[in-house]
Length: 346
Image (tube, rainbow, N blue to C red):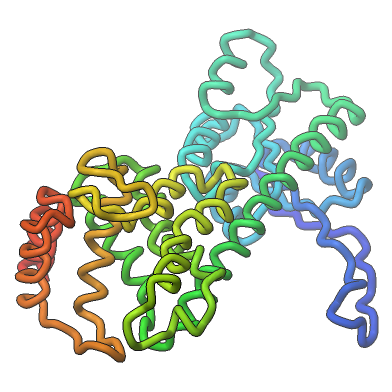
């Protein structure tokens, strides 16, 4: 018989009246999901972890666990190896292969001491192991260690979120671009799929759609929003934004695949671009992908100094510019081939 789903929370600190900007609000207690079909183990872990201030949710099998994860967003999962239905190994493998859950630390609980069983757990992606019978101090030490690691991961996610918010703020400074970044992210990921690029490259293209012009945060409004042509000095300042954007994102390892996009999306196939004057295949592939969709969106969008071109006129213009040496000929062909397929499918 499967144990009922049990939920406990440590005593919550009462809200403070009129706390300015919630500076004094209590820190969210970390959440642990216990997945085990044995009621005695569930009750023991619930009692031990709750005594240390953790919020505890439980599930009796893999199906209940998969329903609980998007509801409770656990910081850590304690997962039994042997359960009815899907095993702990199978559930661990699925969670670690899903981008939305793969960063959740998993401790596998097993009564098996055979080395082959541990190897199976490692291959499934388990972060640590606990052997039955459970010893409280060992449990606390392993939980504390992995939750600290999860805190570091969350801090990186928060830093990344700040950078993305900054990029949206940069876009908002130009009232004429609208949802330019969102459109670029969609065009770029569509083209990435069309080219059959790997998962990490497609994620980088989506992020690059939002972050490619992040360096414009340093460009004064008088230059960024100028409707007439830029002077030589103003143009020199504008050309610094790819390098500035790269420097802003460089500290985050999670954005390392996006850096070449940010730095090189203004390079030209014939070497006439900036900031490095790269030529042909010297320009990183993902930067070339983004610049093709960037040009398409720019030409099909109205600006104070120009009207939006039709799809047909945009294709004609981009092919002329490609013959003049600005864009990767193969990627331009692939992009318009993709758009034709989308229109037929629609």
